[in-house]
Length: 330
Image (cartoon, rainbow, N blue to C red):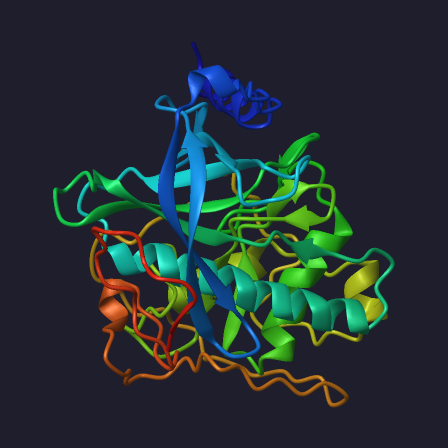
């Protein structure tokens, strides 16, 4: 096959509808679990005992995670069908799952601010939480198995962008404008990308942080200013960008070459300096003071490990018995 045919085949596979998992109670055995929920308003975690059922075989997988069927019996009937995402990296740190949930809530907060400016279409991000299985060991043998869980999304799933300049052939205005908005709204501190989901309900976002060379705050997919530059290299300001009054980025290339790859990129080593001067375009009528501060120095968690700098929380300890109720981890 020619390289062009291989590339086309890869794109067709990536944009094929995700198979709908069959939630068969008989195939999934109920078991006790601990549900960790993050509360954006207080930046605190709470935990409670629940019963869940999870499949043993994944029905889908991405660049970094495998996706399993999960039934959360603590939810009302009709809303119990969920998906559990488990890292493909055996030695993935437990805290990474908690970071990913917190990051999704930060994106959810930015989405609310985007909606407040009256775009043609409103957007949102799924709620997410952590399920811990005290009776299952983690793949690396250290502590209990944990998974990031969110409601199962029905409908046509579309990946609008990745974290390195890819743009879906559909090239919709709203997802691209939201990413641009996050750069402006945070004064150039961060940019939300890897926009994907059903309709305008999104999930699995990635944030690039502008925290100085070598400081990556939002996990392995945070490519820093290099990732931000790649976004603007292929971003073309659209009608929504103009309606919201978003400042064009000086290093944007309106007719830059679109990236054919749409998987999520990961850092595998030190990132070379990017010859771009960071800019901080602002929206004068919008103020944003994130509780997660992209800073060159961080608190108890190292940015090199993908930790968040200013979260006033302590990661839940490895659990063997079920936790007493109620419990607040702060």
